[in-house]
Length: 597
Image (cartoon, rainbow, N blue to C red; front, side):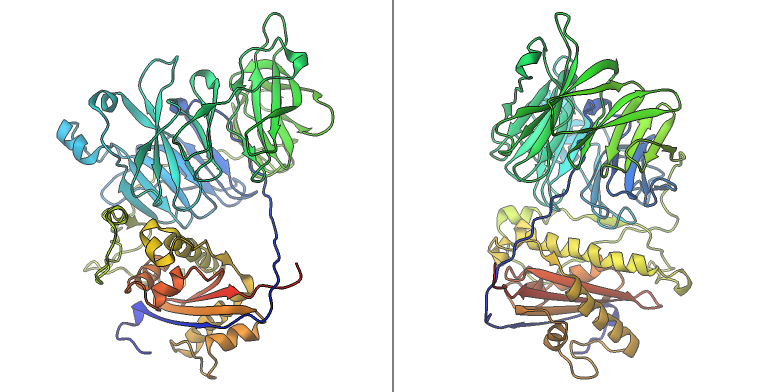
């Protein structure tokens, strides 16, 4: 298969066969999440999240900083598009993993006329930016939503807490101006990765969000953090949850919730609440657990609360409660409390000197203290100062907006799905421009390292799974296309073929020895009942994915391979040529079920 334009080539093959035996093996991996600290959404001066023991982000002075070495070095990754001198404020941040994230940001240099006509057209003073490569490049759209009634439009405040369940489904709390006794807020939702937003029913207050499915969600917040709300019907209705302390603590008064529940699997979760004492009773921190997905709760641990400091920032990892237990101007102390055994604990919690915490696991965490941003690798026994230096990130000289690839094939969409494609992201990042506006190819002396090229494969996995779950493609997937699982053996096959094409200067599914994709996958010992392969040659993974998807629907082509709901696993191999071209191989399989389980 030959092409006139070698920088935008792609090819696809597929094959099926009938399984000869059947075995089902189920593996469940449980990952402990960090229980986020509750802070009034309208007053959050700084947010942070440690995603892994080494990688995380923090907002500081309106900018977004990123680290991959436990805070030893920070990079300002604030999305600043061409034509804007700097970002004026990062309002809300959420990262689904170390690659994919969203930021709501405002740009003081971008003039938006504050007239009724302008607001009806744009309906927002904010933009939403998205990245699939850890902030190296961003895609940008104005944050728009259906027009509110006039009295609500005038009361609308800034964006607050944001949460994404997966690459498509997200929620955003918008603060509303009003009495501090009510902390009013409204809730937006998206099902296309942030392109389009709509108002959904909400508890009527600001707070911190958590969703475990498109139907089940929680919001902890309200005035003084006194509210915990849940929905189990996709935001159609919300119910206020009231948790009762243990009988021996009957004198405890209203609960102040320390964030939404932390789920360790689909059924088991913990939530923490502070109970200010009344009638001479001491204050307590009570941790509750559930084993039925949050329908019922029981107290499992009670700690004495000194009531020092303000909001109590705690974390929960590996079923271990990490609580601040006091601080001096130079030292903060954390205690580890196991949530098993006796109901009461001798640990006394104290919010003094601790302004925020986030833990990736029971050992590695960040804490914001009066002395700055601190990092621990031993569960809070010792800390080092990793405060990022304040910098303003300007738009890069010569940067240009990279328009998304525009399909030339006629596509029939339903009116609802079609609306999702009327708004296209504007992409920008580190692409350099040459005279005449042609993107420059990478300088071989500045070629990315092996680790970065390896990360491109995982970035493409995000794009592939997003296309599979895009509601606009539901007619082709019949709504059955689940996210593809990453298969290391398959990835090794794909990488070897990409390397071979680059080394021996060809571009085809059949290699110089005449081996087909089936031959290569069989040689790796991978059992399959259907397989397919796409190959592409392009400058970026985003452009390659766009080209692969820019084909007629309902056909056995590259697009059909990506969207085929029968496939269960994928392996992607990418290598970079000295001129910057990416040789990309996508191998898909429907795994052969195994017998015996």
